[in-house]
Image (cartoon, rainbow, N blue to C red; front, side):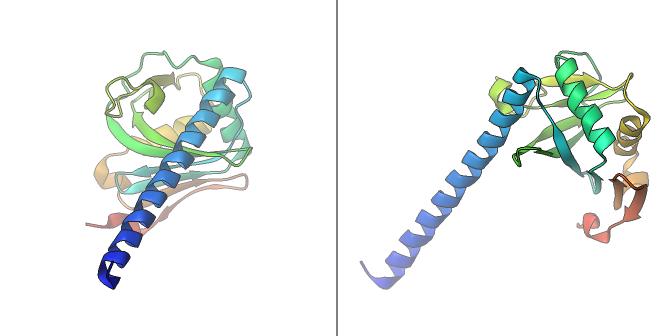
Length: 175
């Protein structure tokens, strides 16, 4: 095998190895999320929601605890208008696992697409949660995500234990 073919072979092997690792890491996070839901032990430490040229970063213990409790107490079978806007949510749990999945926002709640339950395989909503009884901070996050494209463009909502603030991030405005 000549030098050029060897480099191509090594490149393909590394690409396949990285893809397998990414799939395993993602599946491990999903399994951790589902196990915690089933065992009613879910503890979210932080979460980040991105897409549509805006972002939410939340490490507020009260908000994370409220979201964890909502996942545990609601069965995910609520009805809500959760098809208006799509995002990605990345949740970090107390066991250091991460779970990233599609999230759909509505006026009164949101839904997640958990691949294990997505029979269509196309990121359809599989778990829907209603926020009508949620704490004000969670409702504020939902309202921020429901802003019009013009009003939300380039904004980051940061919710931590000391403050809640909106900052501008021009890197979110990529063409």
